[in-house]
Length: 61
Image (cartoon, rainbow, N blue to C red; front, side, top):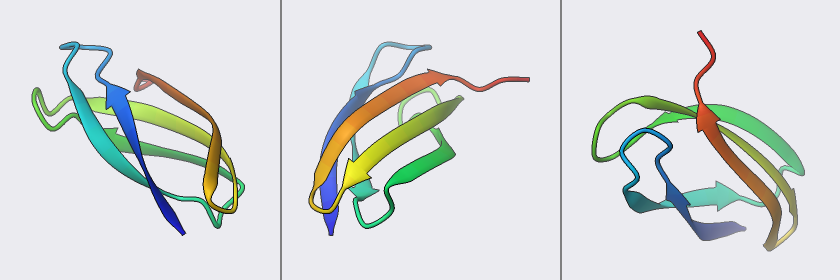
């Protein structure tokens, strides 16, 4: 089940929606900001149908 979460870019400060697949309990991935296109690290902890925790950070180089 997918859940929509609002995230804020750590670079430009703009907020946008991100769809999270809650069938995977722990996830870590990189996605680009929809506004400034810079990569962000996303870490998510879920249970089916619910996001328990979500962290957005700068991509490590």
